[in-house]
Length: 283
Image (cartoon, rainbow, N blue to C red; front, side, top):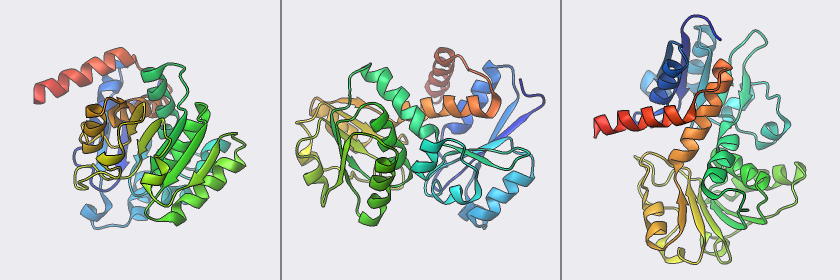
């Protein structure tokens, strides 16, 4: 068990409502640890991402989480020991140690845990995904690990998708992957719909997947969790799809990150209850 206070943080834009500080501080309390967790927004601090990252490394942080839009950029400053995560090319969790900063991707592991918690061992089938950036890469690798049959990706910046398709191919997954010219094309025969864009997040209104193409699928997932009930997921519920919210990804990736930061397994049932109790007190 770590001795002394465990100092953690989150670097990202638009993170004022992030619940990561609460999750990690509550997890620490349940495990008998003093945990502090700071929100670090480079623009608000008047500093570059690189400068904030170096401050964390030099000022006693045990580790940090990384979120939009820095998950790919941070890999330039890390050693990434896991070959699959290196292939993803994006990290959301960093540990500082004597050997230098080490990168992990608990979006990848957390998505698989969230999907299995919702659907058991059922395979994802054919999936249409909007967004091929940092979280999109992690979710795509998670889908591959879950036995996805076919993944069709659409991004408004097509150049973001090609590296994702190449990385999946190089990793040796057997699923069929391709890029679509529109989300409508991607969703034509999909069993699942996935949003991995920031659309729907506080400050980024709207939906990357229009309501007109929702209804023929079985399930949907939205990586956005602030708010939990996004426009996209609300449309999916109205159409009768089973949904996995971004909150479930947030919860499971947070549990995985806490394990990396501390070496301790938190009681997930107790943590979920404590998080719910705090949310109810604020309501």
